[in-house]
Image: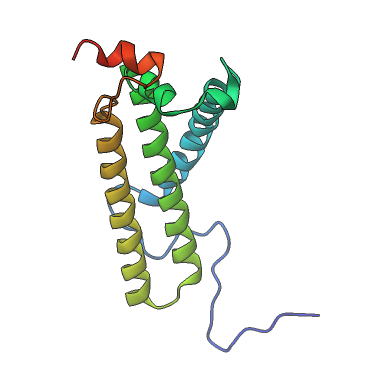
Length: 156
């Protein structure tokens, strides 16, 4: 069985140089590199997150508001979760951008979807970062709260 080409249609050899070459940075290459590096970092961050939340201390039964307040009282865990949030959202948006580029044929719809992906990822990154860094466990503090909250909020 042979494949037939339309008359006048030339297919370039696989290793032939591209007919058009744009000047500037190769964003697709850097996106590809980002996906590999962020994927490895996300595996480390996510398994660290799961280990601390589910295996250390009382396990799943110890995860409550006081536990989260205790974690977010230290800059280490704030930055850990923000890094995980940023990497995951950018990684996911870049993956969705690749799918849109592969499967959406209309240039206008493709542009709209890519802009929607970028804006929604940026909005979620901003909101998530604000939540982590402005988290105040003492906002609804009562005397019946857990020991961790009493220690955190006693000085205020």
